[in-house]
Image 1 (spheres, rainbow, N blue to C red):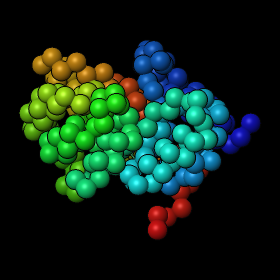
Image 2: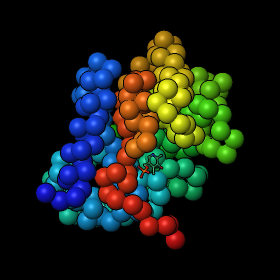
Image 3: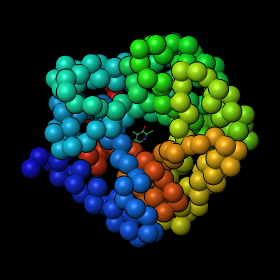
Length: 234
Ligand SMILES: *Cc1c(COP(=O)(O)O)cnc(C)c1O
């Protein structure tokens, strides 16, 4: 067994335990393998171990990997999520190559993604990134502006609004972590009460995925615990 295969098994077992602990069904929680900075060969190992959903932060790097894996694995149905900041000048690349984008926090970016989504591709699946804990330096729409943004994005023809994503500041301990995630869950439930029909709540990383799952996460995002430590980005 390769290291990546073993790491994926450990992680899937951890997700199952976290679900069992709060009486959730493990199939409700997906694993996004965050492959940013790792080579296409590492992604290929994860694919061989059964992983299908991958997250990339840096758009150019992500596109190169998407194309490399399409060449090396023409039969595999992989799902690529953009989870990093999207500037206006990168929307065309995102719209043309990714299946999902989880980091939409402005209407202007959403409009460009909708306009630029190629007609022969399915709608781009979208999560809105929400700044749940009000961290001043972070991206994400403020909770007070979330409903208006969600209602506007839901109307865009080439996007499909699926849910919310958040990256809270690191908190110490399960209870403190869960509390922040519960705020995201409340926002998610609030949008669904308005009829938005969301099914994806992307939250939880290596250090806090148990708390995120306890609070209702449907998708945890993990990189280093699968692929190993990352070299500093140059
Ligand atoms: C990098 C990243 C992750 C995964 O982080 P690791 O420390 O590699 O597990 C998850 N979510 C987002 C948005 C990221 O940028």
